[in-house]
Length: 479
Ligand SMILES: NC(=O)c1ccc[n+]([C@@H]2O[C@H](COP(=O)([O-])OP(=O)(O)OC[C@H]3O[C@@H](n4cnc5c(N)ncnc54)[C@H](O)[C@@H]3O)[C@@H](O)[C@H]2O)c1
Image (tube, rainbow, N blue to C red; front, top):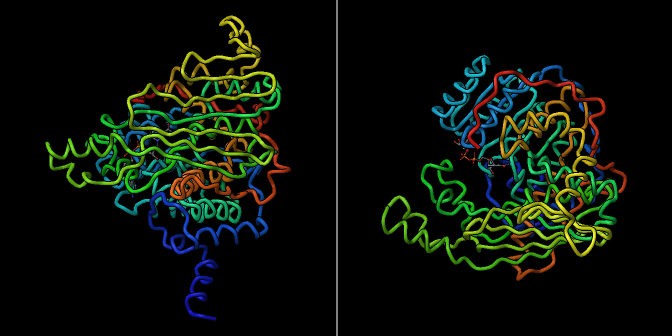
């Protein structure tokens, strides 16, 4: 056998060249090697089915939080507010960021946590023997490496979105979760927003008939206030992610909630996609303008920025379609669209106000109110009011955290499993590939490897749970 072929197969056996190293990688289109690796993974029988998996109950969930920037600092406050939680460890690349999180703990009368810092401090945190859950709030490039390392060290992993940036990482998450029987949940908080939960229940109860089409988005102008703000993202990581590639870099806020309404991975499956991006009409000019005034921005001038708007269309095995939009760089009002459309009716959240129709016209506000009363899910009735008080994107962040902890404490399956994390995140590399190839059709791998046909839809009850309380010391959140 020629040496290069032997080497290629050796890499496949290792699970791809980037995988074994644990080094951060950035969002990229899969190359030939990654596609061959994915094809090989698809042929293998899964070692275990993590959908519906209930891990042994944890009376107390001992947490290590990695990444204490804007989002991670708030996560400390939210998690510290939940009973049955101990925040054992805090980690950030920059040691000074830990002090702020310690102050948050002290303010709500929680004990001081252990501290880990430096580029690879998260490894020691994952290796420690006093943690059950590693909660990951770092730049995107570290989500998979930390989640995988956590699971390999016997911890459950909960990671911010997107869980993975490459096709190989998606498979690595699936493979590791199945082999270790550790949960890998992507923290897709938008699945827990109030109108999204209402439409999830209404979809399940058949009010929209057969769902035919759905739309989601992340349209949020981050350009001047965030991407180019020296004081926002650590080391300007998020601006850097927008250089040198084109595609849907942040698909899961729009996709997650509609995927749950459509029972993706649990009765239906995303089969293929096509993706198209515009050119960039604002980021490069902004970089040029800023660098002329401030040399800090010089490394960002003359770069090839991601096109402003990306449209990705997904078709499912059962013949339904999903449109996902991504634009963080034109001045538009915020939107995740959240449109669910079926044979009997439709719902749409953005542009607001959220609305529902069962024919040509939107129903009246009083009719919407009575639907809300009838179809509000038990989780919202149970924890919604407290969540609104605590905050975190209007309360959805807290509902998500509370539910995660309550499931772990009661040995219940999580609402989002590793197949959701992998398939929703796979839109990142696959949309980049389609865009690169002039919107060519790209297959979406079946990360469940056939189990989607028998996997049960997300449980909408609180059966077996709802035993987790909240404390009296309310956190002060920024977001
Ligand atoms: N779900 C949501 O609504 C939502 C909202 C905002 C951000 N996010 C996600 O949260 C994550 C963090 O975003 P952010 O806005 O807080 O960014 P940030 O830059 O403010 O925070 C990232 C933190 O990670 C730290 N970090 C970097 N490298 C590290 C390493 N090697 N080890 C430990 N820590 C390291 C940084 O120092 C920083 O404190 C991102 O994945 C982002 O997409 C999600």
